[in-house]
Image 1 (cartoon, rainbow, N blue to C red):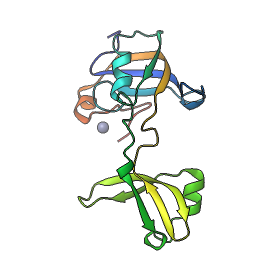
Image 2 (image 1 turned 120 degrees about the horizontal axis):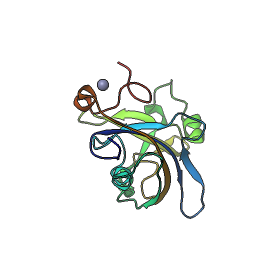
Image 3 (image 1 turned 90 degrees about the vertical axis):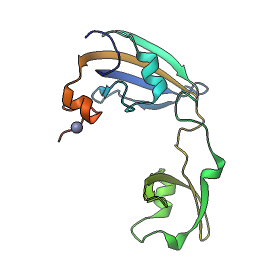
Image 4 (image 1 turned 120 degrees about the vertical axis):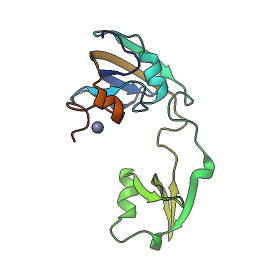
Length: 167
Ligand code: ZN
């Protein structure tokens, strides 16, 4: 297999930047390449679609709109919470300063991530939007390896071995 297609395991080096400022929001520089299984929702859809058909050694540069990336911001997905509702183990000031994502369970018992965006006295303002919701994103992606997925990887929907799950 020599091109990026459905069910291939692809390793890439990448840099993501915000189009307006050129600021890097994520990069594999100084790390191992990112390895993912194509077509199993491991990556944002627009990213995979732009990489389809690429070959090893190829570099692709593209821009994703919020629709193709992390969606739009939903202002209704913010909430005011009493500081006393947080367990003692959570340092809300530190979480705000460092942008640490926190977890909670919704009424259906599903895990949800949120961030603390402001603290006003006893009120903690939290936001369930993805931190990159509403953002248009630029990517530059180098394909470093492509291989066929094993039947076990296809069954699990993720990559095993280097850059993937170990279990
Ligand atoms: Zn697995």
